[in-house]
Amino acid sequence: MRHSNGSTRNSPPRGKSVTSRILGGIGEMFITLGVLGLLFVAWELWWTGLGADRERQQAQEDFYSGLDIQAAPQEGGGGSAPDFEVCYTLEDGTEIGCAPQMEAAAEAGEVMGMLYAPRLGDEWAAPIRHGVGPQQLDTGGVGHYPDTQMVDEVGNFALAGHRQTYGNMLGDQHLLEDGDPLYVVSGDGIYVYEIYESHVVDPHQTEVISPVPNEPEAEPETGQLTLTTCHPMYSNAERLITHAEIVDFQPWGGEVPEDISHHLDDSDALAGAR
Image 1 (tube, rainbow, N blue to C red):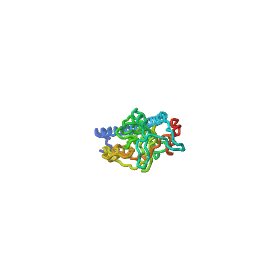
Image 2 (cartoon, helix red, strand yellow):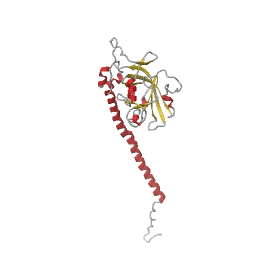
Image 3 (cartoon, helix red, strand yellow):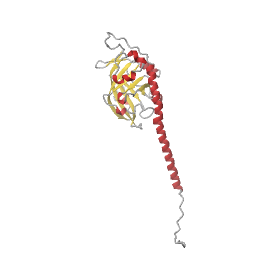
Protein backbone atom coordinates (compact mmCIF):
# COMPACT_ATOMS: atom_id res chain seq x y z
CA MET A 1 0.00 0.00 0.00
CA ARG A 2 1.38 3.40 -1.00
CA HIS A 3 1.08 6.53 1.20
CA SER A 4 0.52 9.97 -0.09
CA ASN A 5 4.24 10.78 0.01
CA GLY A 6 4.89 7.95 -2.45
CA SER A 7 6.98 5.86 -0.06
CA THR A 8 6.54 2.19 0.44
CA ARG A 9 5.85 0.86 3.93
CA ASN A 10 8.65 -1.53 5.07
CA SER A 11 7.63 -4.78 6.68
CA PRO A 12 8.57 -4.94 10.39
CA PRO A 13 11.57 -7.25 11.11
CA ARG A 14 10.61 -10.68 12.21
CA GLY A 15 11.88 -11.97 15.55
CA LYS A 16 14.17 -15.01 15.63
CA SER A 17 12.35 -18.27 15.56
CA VAL A 18 12.50 -20.61 18.54
CA THR A 19 14.57 -23.04 16.49
CA SER A 20 17.13 -20.39 15.60
CA ARG A 21 17.47 -19.33 19.23
CA ILE A 22 17.97 -22.94 20.32
CA LEU A 23 20.58 -23.58 17.62
CA GLY A 24 22.35 -20.35 18.52
CA GLY A 25 22.45 -21.36 22.18
CA ILE A 26 23.80 -24.77 21.33
CA GLY A 27 26.49 -23.20 19.14
CA GLU A 28 27.57 -20.88 21.95
CA MET A 29 27.69 -23.82 24.34
CA PHE A 30 29.95 -25.79 21.98
CA ILE A 31 32.25 -22.78 21.58
CA THR A 32 32.49 -22.49 25.37
CA LEU A 33 33.18 -26.20 25.71
CA GLY A 34 35.83 -25.96 23.01
CA VAL A 35 37.61 -23.14 24.82
CA LEU A 36 37.46 -25.09 28.09
CA GLY A 37 38.80 -28.15 26.27
CA LEU A 38 41.75 -26.19 24.91
CA LEU A 39 42.48 -24.83 28.38
CA PHE A 40 42.39 -28.36 29.79
CA VAL A 41 44.80 -29.60 27.10
CA ALA A 42 47.10 -26.69 27.85
CA TRP A 43 46.97 -27.58 31.54
CA GLU A 44 47.78 -31.22 30.80
CA LEU A 45 50.69 -30.43 28.51
CA TRP A 46 52.19 -27.48 30.34
CA TRP A 47 51.26 -27.55 34.00
CA THR A 48 51.69 -31.30 34.53
CA GLY A 49 55.00 -31.02 32.67
CA LEU A 50 56.31 -28.35 35.05
CA GLY A 51 55.56 -30.44 38.11
CA ALA A 52 56.96 -33.62 36.58
CA ASP A 53 60.15 -31.87 35.51
CA ARG A 54 60.74 -30.60 39.05
CA GLU A 55 60.25 -34.12 40.41
CA ARG A 56 62.55 -35.54 37.73
CA GLN A 57 65.38 -33.19 38.61
CA GLN A 58 64.95 -33.85 42.33
CA ALA A 59 64.89 -37.61 41.73
CA GLN A 60 68.13 -37.41 39.77
CA GLU A 61 69.83 -35.41 42.53
CA ASP A 62 68.54 -37.78 45.23
CA PHE A 63 69.66 -40.83 43.25
CA TYR A 64 73.26 -39.71 42.93
CA SER A 65 73.50 -38.24 46.42
CA GLY A 66 72.18 -41.51 47.86
CA LEU A 67 74.72 -43.75 46.13
CA ASP A 68 77.34 -45.36 48.31
CA ILE A 69 79.87 -46.58 45.79
CA GLN A 70 83.20 -48.09 46.65
CA ALA A 71 85.17 -48.94 43.55
CA ALA A 72 86.48 -52.48 43.67
CA PRO A 73 90.29 -52.75 43.95
CA GLN A 74 92.04 -53.18 40.63
CA GLU A 75 94.37 -56.12 40.26
CA GLY A 76 97.76 -55.33 38.78
CA GLY A 77 97.11 -51.60 38.44
CA GLY A 78 97.91 -49.91 35.16
CA GLY A 79 94.28 -49.26 34.28
CA SER A 80 93.05 -52.85 34.57
CA ALA A 81 89.32 -53.26 35.06
CA PRO A 82 88.03 -53.51 38.64
CA ASP A 83 86.63 -56.78 39.90
CA PHE A 84 82.85 -57.27 39.96
CA GLU A 85 80.36 -60.09 40.27
CA VAL A 86 79.45 -61.46 36.84
CA CYS A 87 75.86 -62.51 36.16
CA TYR A 88 76.30 -63.65 32.55
CA THR A 89 78.64 -63.31 29.59
CA LEU A 90 77.91 -62.17 26.03
CA GLU A 91 78.97 -64.17 22.99
CA ASP A 92 81.94 -61.85 22.44
CA GLY A 93 83.18 -62.47 25.98
CA THR A 94 81.86 -59.23 27.52
CA GLU A 95 80.93 -59.83 31.15
CA ILE A 96 77.68 -58.33 32.45
CA GLY A 97 77.78 -57.45 36.12
CA CYS A 98 75.10 -58.23 38.68
CA ALA A 99 72.84 -55.45 39.98
CA PRO A 100 72.02 -56.10 43.65
CA GLN A 101 71.84 -52.38 44.48
CA MET A 102 69.41 -51.76 41.64
CA GLU A 103 67.20 -54.64 42.74
CA ALA A 104 67.24 -53.44 46.34
CA ALA A 105 66.18 -49.95 45.22
CA ALA A 106 63.33 -51.45 43.20
CA GLU A 107 62.06 -53.41 46.19
CA ALA A 108 62.25 -50.30 48.37
CA GLY A 109 60.25 -48.22 45.88
CA GLU A 110 63.18 -45.91 45.22
CA VAL A 111 64.69 -44.74 41.93
CA MET A 112 66.45 -47.80 40.49
CA GLY A 113 68.77 -45.97 38.15
CA MET A 114 69.02 -43.34 35.44
CA LEU A 115 68.39 -43.82 31.73
CA TYR A 116 70.36 -41.70 29.24
CA ALA A 117 69.75 -41.42 25.50
CA PRO A 118 72.30 -38.99 23.97
CA ARG A 119 70.28 -38.78 20.74
CA LEU A 120 67.52 -37.02 22.72
CA GLY A 121 69.81 -34.26 23.98
CA ASP A 122 72.79 -33.64 26.22
CA GLU A 123 70.54 -32.90 29.20
CA TRP A 124 67.99 -35.68 28.62
CA ALA A 125 67.86 -37.92 31.69
CA ALA A 126 65.08 -40.20 32.95
CA PRO A 127 64.87 -41.65 36.46
CA ILE A 128 63.85 -45.32 36.37
CA ARG A 129 61.25 -46.51 38.87
CA HIS A 130 59.87 -50.01 39.41
CA GLY A 131 56.28 -50.15 38.16
CA VAL A 132 54.22 -48.53 35.42
CA GLY A 133 51.44 -46.83 37.40
CA PRO A 134 50.80 -43.09 37.85
CA GLN A 135 53.13 -43.01 40.86
CA GLN A 136 56.01 -44.03 38.62
CA LEU A 137 55.11 -42.46 35.26
CA ASP A 138 53.59 -39.14 36.35
CA THR A 139 56.72 -38.03 38.18
CA GLY A 140 59.00 -37.29 35.25
CA GLY A 141 60.69 -40.55 34.40
CA VAL A 142 60.15 -44.04 33.02
CA GLY A 143 58.74 -47.11 34.71
CA HIS A 144 59.98 -50.70 34.68
CA TYR A 145 57.38 -53.34 33.79
CA PRO A 146 57.43 -55.51 36.95
CA ASP A 147 57.02 -58.79 35.07
CA THR A 148 60.04 -58.19 32.84
CA GLN A 149 63.68 -58.92 33.58
CA MET A 150 66.31 -56.78 35.29
CA VAL A 151 69.45 -55.40 33.66
CA ASP A 152 71.61 -58.22 35.03
CA GLU A 153 69.41 -60.98 33.60
CA VAL A 154 69.08 -62.42 30.13
CA GLY A 155 65.71 -61.26 28.87
CA ASN A 156 63.94 -57.96 28.40
CA PHE A 157 64.35 -54.94 30.69
CA ALA A 158 61.19 -53.17 29.47
CA LEU A 159 60.35 -49.54 30.27
CA ALA A 160 57.30 -47.32 29.70
CA GLY A 161 56.98 -43.54 29.61
CA HIS A 162 54.60 -40.73 28.72
CA ARG A 163 54.84 -39.11 25.31
CA GLN A 164 52.97 -35.84 25.78
CA THR A 165 52.09 -35.27 29.45
CA TYR A 166 53.83 -35.29 32.83
CA GLY A 167 57.19 -34.29 31.42
CA ASN A 168 56.71 -36.27 28.16
CA MET A 169 59.91 -38.20 28.82
CA LEU A 170 59.49 -40.25 25.65
CA GLY A 171 58.02 -37.46 23.54
CA ASP A 172 60.95 -37.69 21.12
CA GLN A 173 61.31 -41.46 21.09
CA HIS A 174 60.64 -41.42 17.35
CA LEU A 175 63.99 -39.66 16.87
CA LEU A 176 65.97 -42.66 18.12
CA GLU A 177 67.85 -44.49 15.39
CA ASP A 178 69.33 -47.94 14.93
CA GLY A 179 72.86 -48.00 16.35
CA ASP A 180 72.16 -45.32 18.96
CA PRO A 181 73.40 -46.10 22.50
CA LEU A 182 71.21 -46.17 25.59
CA TYR A 183 72.81 -46.12 29.05
CA VAL A 184 71.37 -47.40 32.31
CA VAL A 185 73.35 -46.02 35.25
CA SER A 186 72.87 -47.90 38.52
CA GLY A 187 74.62 -48.18 41.85
CA ASP A 188 76.29 -51.30 40.43
CA GLY A 189 77.72 -49.79 37.26
CA ILE A 190 76.72 -48.70 33.77
CA TYR A 191 74.81 -50.98 31.40
CA VAL A 192 75.23 -50.07 27.73
CA TYR A 193 72.66 -50.96 25.06
CA GLU A 194 72.50 -50.40 21.30
CA ILE A 195 69.21 -49.77 19.49
CA TYR A 196 68.44 -52.15 16.64
CA GLU A 197 64.72 -51.70 15.87
CA SER A 198 61.72 -49.38 16.25
CA HIS A 199 58.15 -50.18 15.19
CA VAL A 200 54.50 -49.40 15.94
CA VAL A 201 52.05 -51.97 17.36
CA ASP A 202 48.51 -52.16 18.70
CA PRO A 203 48.11 -51.87 22.50
CA HIS A 204 47.22 -55.56 22.86
CA GLN A 205 50.51 -56.73 21.31
CA THR A 206 52.26 -57.33 24.63
CA GLU A 207 54.74 -59.73 23.04
CA VAL A 208 57.00 -56.73 22.51
CA ILE A 209 57.98 -56.96 26.19
CA SER A 210 58.47 -60.74 26.19
CA PRO A 211 61.92 -62.01 27.31
CA VAL A 212 62.71 -62.28 23.61
CA PRO A 213 60.83 -59.33 22.09
CA ASN A 214 58.09 -60.37 19.65
CA GLU A 215 58.85 -64.08 20.26
CA PRO A 216 56.92 -65.01 23.41
CA GLU A 217 57.78 -68.72 23.17
CA ALA A 218 61.53 -68.26 22.69
CA GLU A 219 64.18 -68.62 25.39
CA PRO A 220 66.35 -65.51 25.88
CA GLU A 221 70.09 -65.72 25.39
CA THR A 222 71.08 -62.10 26.00
CA GLY A 223 69.88 -58.87 27.56
CA GLN A 224 67.45 -56.52 25.87
CA LEU A 225 65.99 -53.11 26.69
CA THR A 226 62.60 -52.07 25.32
CA LEU A 227 61.02 -48.59 25.42
CA THR A 228 57.24 -48.27 25.03
CA THR A 229 55.13 -45.12 24.66
CA CYS A 230 51.87 -43.97 23.09
CA HIS A 231 51.54 -43.37 19.35
CA PRO A 232 50.84 -41.16 17.51
CA MET A 233 51.37 -37.92 19.40
CA TYR A 234 48.28 -36.83 21.37
CA SER A 235 46.74 -40.28 21.02
CA ASN A 236 46.94 -43.68 22.69
CA ALA A 237 45.59 -45.64 19.75
CA GLU A 238 48.90 -47.44 19.20
CA ARG A 239 52.29 -47.96 20.84
CA LEU A 240 55.72 -46.89 19.62
CA ILE A 241 58.28 -49.56 20.49
CA THR A 242 62.08 -49.31 20.49
CA HIS A 243 64.30 -52.34 21.10
CA ALA A 244 67.97 -52.33 22.11
CA GLU A 245 70.47 -55.08 22.93
CA ILE A 246 73.06 -55.01 25.68
CA VAL A 247 76.61 -54.59 24.38
CA ASP A 248 78.71 -53.64 27.40
CA PHE A 249 78.94 -53.18 31.15
CA GLN A 250 81.22 -50.76 32.97
CA PRO A 251 81.66 -51.26 36.73
CA TRP A 252 82.47 -48.28 38.90
CA GLY A 253 86.19 -47.72 38.80
CA GLY A 254 86.23 -48.44 35.09
CA GLU A 255 85.87 -46.04 32.18
CA VAL A 256 82.72 -43.90 32.01
CA PRO A 257 81.35 -43.52 28.45
CA GLU A 258 82.28 -40.06 27.17
CA ASP A 259 78.82 -39.05 25.97
CA ILE A 260 77.30 -39.34 29.46
CA SER A 261 80.29 -38.32 31.57
CA HIS A 262 78.94 -34.77 31.98
CA HIS A 263 75.92 -36.17 33.85
CA LEU A 264 78.25 -37.66 36.47
CA ASP A 265 80.86 -34.92 36.83
CA ASP A 266 79.12 -33.14 39.71
CA SER A 267 78.33 -36.24 41.73
CA ASP A 268 80.28 -36.42 44.98
CA ALA A 269 79.18 -40.03 45.40
CA LEU A 270 81.02 -41.00 42.22
CA ALA A 271 84.17 -38.99 42.84
CA GLY A 272 86.09 -41.95 44.21
CA ALA A 273 84.66 -44.49 41.82
CA ARG A 274 85.81 -43.05 38.50
